[in-house]
Length: 206
Image (tube, rainbow, N blue to C red; front, side, top):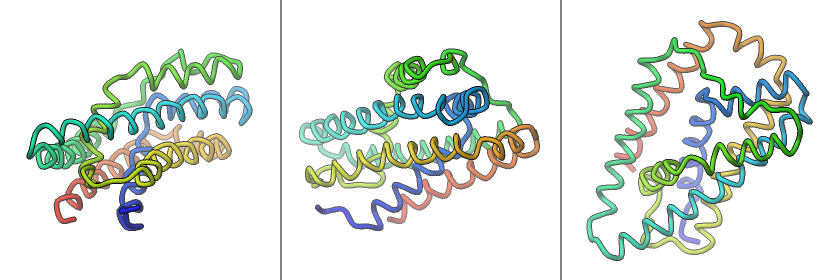
């Protein structure tokens, strides 16, 4: 394995920041937990896991192949990774007061419905692979990674959001009080936005 603990820690930190950014799946976890408790929420989290494992794996294979054909592609992707994090952070800060849009497909009752909704939300968004193709080269040298490296990246890609989603379901009562406050939503978005910009700047110097 060629990746260092610091490499993996930086990537895990970025994933955590992205998880803390409120979105439709985040809100669906809240809605399912409030309506049916933890037992209603964990199938959704497991459905999301499938995509969180698949997309980074396919992105790594795709980027590795492209790099073997086009020299200099890695540098372009690293620049793209910086721009993506800074851009996402700036948009979060700009729209910090905007409420989260709910997706009714993600809140249908039933364990199987929850799992399929989480799966559809991830696999139904092919832009996710473009996100990983843009972000991963900012953290790792995809030209020299080994199978154990790929396994570690894929593991973090699903483990961090999974732990976050399950923790969110377990502590839904506290989260529900936080989400009821517009000021708290704004504060969360502003903090997450600046952290994402910080990750983008950190990529430049690592």
